[in-house]
Length: 264
Image (tube, rainbow, N blue to C red):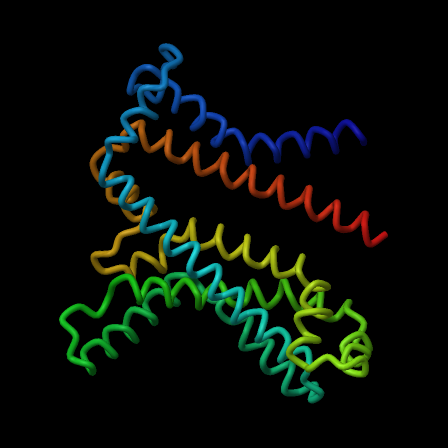
């Protein structure tokens, strides 16, 4: 039985990480072949430095990912605090249902509906171009918000409700009590929501495709390349992104484990 369980886990890991391993391996290939590994080389990493289209798309992607993660974290944390403070259970359940809709809804439906909304507003305001940087940013904030809210809410429920009251009794203002007492206790949930928002924004294609206009992100540029051919420097860039996200997650888990040990 244990042998079958280990085999099952091994197969899952192989299906999950074998494609990534192949991508990383061929990013160091000395030839353009995706079938034969002819030798170790850093040529594709070097050529990536001179690929202006790819680097511009990466810059666009990082700007959108960072801004949408920061804004959605601030808005999502504020929303989570408000939802947690609600006394009406029916109202709380209704708000949570609405919050979950962007997560459950198909990306293509969300993308098309946002595109139509932005085009309508653009025509109404008389804009020459309805889609661009702002529309992509708003779209990413929209689908990131529920993940931040659902990451912060459990931490708020775990926080002792008497702590802010005690801070108020000791002379803190409500604003100061939140930042001195509540915010540190929910910081891990906020960090989790921010990292999740960043990675989701970095990876998004469907919603970005419908709302980008001329402001193209990296997934869209790579998709357009598949119509002709994907150059090996794409493997190099994807490897760099994968390693960066992996290191970020490892550092976050290390910091979280240290925080948990201090509290224990």
